[in-house]
Image (cartoon, rainbow, N blue to C red; front, side, top):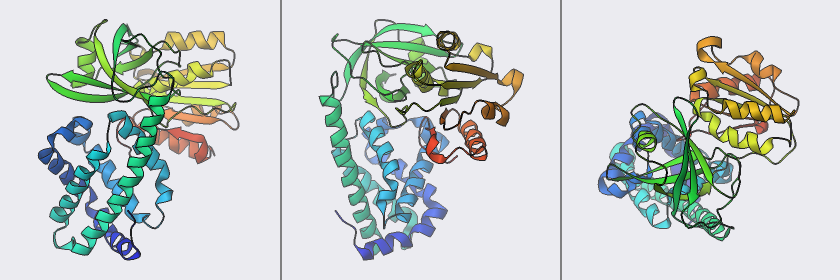
Length: 380
């Protein structure tokens, strides 16, 4: 489906309304879709709805699409991220008409008289164009996963082979395939999706893989969140020997394959994908590892990090405890920033915003800064 020149004009005419009321529109959209099609709620984390991060992320995406309707190729990076998220959750072509129907209805109900027939028709065409792009890209990724050695499509049963407590809040789960067959490899930084039955409801959650690829098992390391229904279910209800369903590894936040110096800057549970990167890079390239957390009791993987830095002279590590040293400082990053380094950072949004600001002041080019959000993408 293509968008005509006239339809692009009408799309751009909605930009002021989206800038002012885009979040109200997307909030209404989700309420409408969950009411009309309750099954769609299983694809979303309720906490992201309650905090408003999911509607805000969608509002930003819709606005960006409107602003770049003349050249959607500019948004291909965002499209790739969406494709990976959708494939991880099992979104299929049959779900797109539901989203389109509810989005257009939400526009009519929120924009009122401003949602003229011309504007609704234009957005229907624009949505159809985007849906076609996503459906085709997702079909290709599903096929690639299924054809990969040890790969599969949909859900596959895994057994919890071991649980290890990494800190007072984080526990690692070692997952082995129930059928005993080979498992698909992955790139450090990618995640898997757990499909769980919690209190009679089906839920899905993405968790970063916290171990380097080994062909034998996947490892995830989960923080027990206060009030977190799924994290507490994993920590308290699931035991060694229990079975869970997994989707194949996904994600575009992955370790580059260069020999450039590597800087890993993390806070809290943002450490999990960085540990996979650290293990993969050990002995391969210079690595500077900086981790910040609240205190020593909440410091996960310290023994592993110390072991790797002892075994490999190319690794140096530095830790920052909030209750002792305060927040991460400009000087800490500066002294751990080799020339031409690739910098990966992950943690709470405020932490990532501070790190990004410091990297910019230190002259690190944007193309050498790599970050990802746990949950919907946000501005930093």
